[in-house]
Length: 227
Image 1 (cartoon, rainbow, N blue to C red):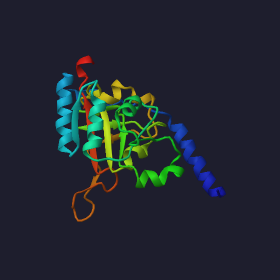
Image 2 (image 1 turned 90 degrees about the horizontal axis):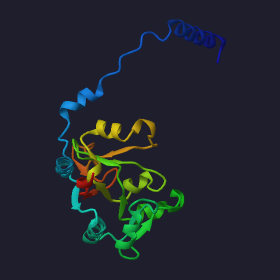
Image 3 (image 1 turned 45 degrees about the vertical axis):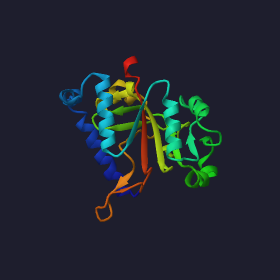
Image 4 (image 1 turned 180 degrees about the vertical axis):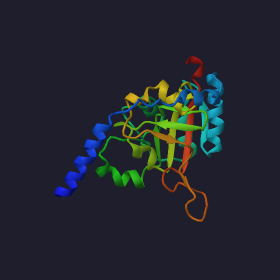
């Protein structure tokens, strides 16, 4: 840094310090903006709205009960002829998936990406993930990658199977952020997934699967009555 540049920088910083913090700015009332637009308080209505809007984005929504969702996942794997699926071993889904899926079908995501890259891109048919919640207003999933479920688990395989509990469907993004306290625990990536991957960058032709999964299957666990 030259002497002239350093002097200019010091002068700017000095003026900023002299200006002081000034009067505190009023924060916008975000809650008041969302309140009139919020869907019904009834969890069942929110779940139905979520399913309708997710289907509108070309997601496949399979509804299941709290006890038979593993069978619903297995049916998706069987019907779509997915020979190799990937999931996180340390998740709430792991034990049920291991018990339900045919031997040799389930692979755990527990390798370093550099050692696993070839198999991940070339031999895995689907990634199965948990979800942190859903947004009824848009039919979006909230996916919260972590060590057990890295971002690539839902991004790379051509099919993404997401298990969503209806009791975690929120009216809108603001409701999800405030109810779950996002401000104090944001991960490196917090994902909103609305339908399968799609783009219309080239000649305005809508193409699916260009930057991520071509198919999105949501297994919606109807547990809202217990919420």
